[in-house]
Amino acid sequence: MLYRFAFDNLITRTDPETAHHLALQAIGAAGATEAGRRALRASFGRLPHQPIRDERLRVFPRAFPARLGLAAGMDKNATAVLGLAALGFGFVEIGTVTRHSQPGNEQPRLWRHPQIGSLRNRMGFNNDGADAVADRLRALRATKAGRSVIIGVNIGKSKITPAELAASDYAYSAQQLARYADYLVINVSSPNTPGLRDLQTVESLQPIIEATRAAAMRSSGREVPLLVKIAPDLADEDVIAVAELVRAEQITGMVATNTTIDHEFGAGGLSGQALRARALEVVKLTRKGLGLRPVLMGVGGITTTADARAMLAAGADLLQAYSAFVYQGPSWPGRINRELAK
Image 1 (spheres, rainbow, N blue to C red):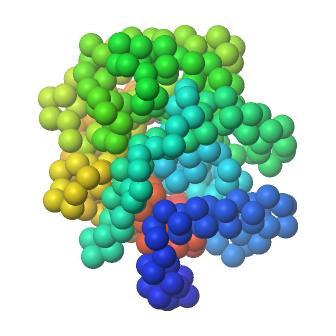
Image 2 (tube, rainbow, N blue to C red):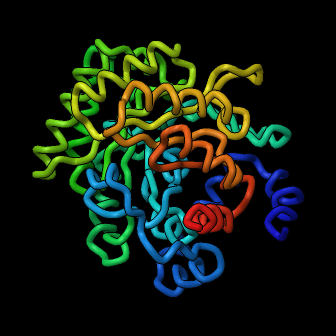
């Protein structure tokens, strides 16, 4: 109730991107000390006592403490990982990170749509670049607290890189980041980088998968779990085609879904509750194409425990969220994870 009051009377009067940065700075500062992390866990982020026991998840190097994690987009540069984990997310996916640092699109580029529980963005992969983020992750993993968090790294194509060189762009980022990642996500589904979604075709995606996997192996000396993130706006047959490619390439799995451009609010991709129905459909289709073995992370419109359970019932093994965290507040991820464990 306190967060809801603050959101309605203070946060909504602040520019969305400014509020985002201020919140992330506060979470990062709270998570920078052991005392701060303990306070966050005690207040908000207490997780279930037992990690997830799931045969499909054995492809990951460590057991997940809970099923719900933070989707990419909030902590693009790995500046608040420890604080976010202490708030009750079972894992934290950073990024999207690109080979080259880039400022993203011009502002304004982030909007709230509280009447439908959604956010809209046209950020354009603003991030510090693979080299800088790798340095930050190296320092994080050098600490006991940093090694304890399951971290996914979401990588995308730089805006200045032509489509025909996309595979080498992804490979460079994987080379720099894979050694610090519990898993990597190939993002070919953001609507805010020109031409990026064209890379979701099987013909374009296959060389990206191969180059990324090889670079991650060279860098880390291990088989780094690798997933592909798709858009909800793909035609049903294309969803299945990508899933079948993932299965044929024998990589870890998929993330479904990214934001949607199927809306009437203007430029950018829409996330949150407005996406829930289509995200659920795409998760079902993706599981059909993947078959039983590959891992599937379900994302899109999860707000309640019932939403989360519906996504799991549709075929997801793990869940991610972003918009509901913004609208529901710091106690939300821990509460959902505890309820899912019952």
